Length: 338
Image (cartoon, rainbow, N blue to C red; front, side, top):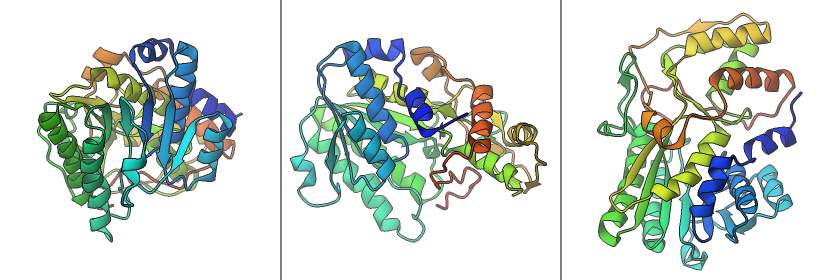
């Protein structure tokens, strides 16, 4: 029913709207921090879009590359790779120049025991990257965690909502944004801040977390009663297309699906698809970490994969014995402890 090749092909096949925008993006593209959950398929998506568009842009992926599956995916498809620890002295200076940068490096889990390392990855390193590539256009991956948790009837935080991070991880993400904003204000660097809420890849994500709990008879927490999510292929396309909107007065964009999704209702759907009984725990709150994505829909169009399709695919993936990345989202966390 599902396998890794089918999933990767689906995630890395560029749409016509991406291909059209890639034709407008002049010059090479370097993806910094490309070895994480989204980076490998993002790089291959760009490579495929460049080939489809018929441009000569070079795509370079930079990371420590500790995951064998990611390395093989990129190697087999001809994506140029640079293996580097970005915190090592002198490494940034050796990276190739590029007029277009997608910055993905960051640290979330493990913050509570090594806060200094999270701040180094999320604030100190961005300040150096912003200076190194001050003459480039940069899409900066950020998170909806920078916003306050919003009333469930609010429709979610919009780009104009003042940031109010909960916990050190979220605070450090605001710090990352501020470093790139400093570069924009000081050097005129063109910056797009990309605030993502939950990409869905089937091997990980909030839908995987809920479905796995239902499938293994683990209670699903209702502490965070609502969430947003978006198909990873759509999320990656928007990251690339955002380069065209990068500006020295800083372009902010919330990225997720258009729905404000009920955790309880989603768990019930998985229970039906997986032929299981669903268990719940914790009382629902009247606030949740949700984002308003109206601006995204206006500029980039609605995602190509619907919520109902993602739920169906996720159930099929689990029933097929599909691989897990072993990286739970901890979507139910309300105090910012990671």
